[in-house]
Amino acid sequence: MVGPNACAECHKQETVAWKGSHHFKTFREMPRSAEANKIGDRMGIKRIKSDTLCLNCHFTVQIKNAGEVPVAGISCESCHSAGQDWIKVHSGFSGKTILFESKAEAKARWQLAESKGMIRARSFYLLAKNCYGCHVVPEEELVNKGGHKAGSAFELVSWSQGEVRHNTWYSKGRENVQASTERMRMLYLVGLGVELETALRAVGKSTVRKVYAFEMAKRADQARKQLAIAAKAAPNVPEIAKIVELGHSAGLKLNNGPALTAAADGVSKLLVGITEKYDGSTMAGLDNLIPAPGKFKGTTIKPGS
Image (cartoon, one colour):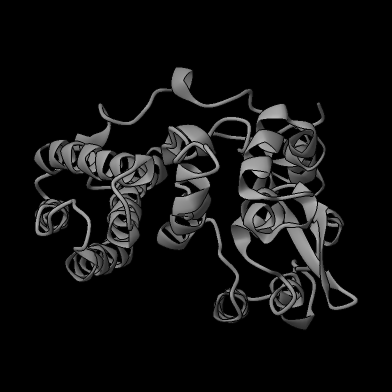
């Protein structure tokens, strides 16, 4: 992790948007939260900012003097991955300036950055996996023993187009525009698929008939139902129906880990295939299912505000 200051050098408007978000505020607010501290007490956590169980999702952590040090809340690298290996590549313009880099050089630069771990905004599947990796709680005991919520009422379009939106780079800070219709279709579909995949894996790893297992089974079932509606709305994307079929191929019950993991693996493979084959332009049938702007989470920051 290079930390958000390294990104803020160039991404000034994006940083302004981030500083107006809950992702930013968690650094100061979470350790002071009565609810968070009650959860910590139940889990035997003495200091929220020093326990890996909390650090993994709620903070940006750097390794300093062989120890983990939280330097920010949920920040740039929480979504785009640890930047040490790719930050100089992605901003290097192939050794030129942005005005003189050719399209071929830019393409090669982005490919190299991605090969070194950068998760770009166009990487729908990897981006969604990152979001759901925390918004669906990955720890059974944290829920059953600690009383932590099993996850957020998360949906990729509405959560990415509200306060988290920082779509200002290509307008040079003049606008913070909403995602295109095609992009929102992809976000909606891939988000639902990753919700199902994540919930299936969570049920498969559950060990006791308690809150965590029940909540994850509920999430998986709801995702299956929503995807079934999407499959009917966009029949020209047959992969959606195949995802639904896989979602029903393994029982949502304890001691069924191998079957649930296999189903989740199959969903993952289909989702990756969808991102490689489609760009959203042929998915107009999904439009009535996608949350409208009134459902977006939080206030979108305007450039210069």
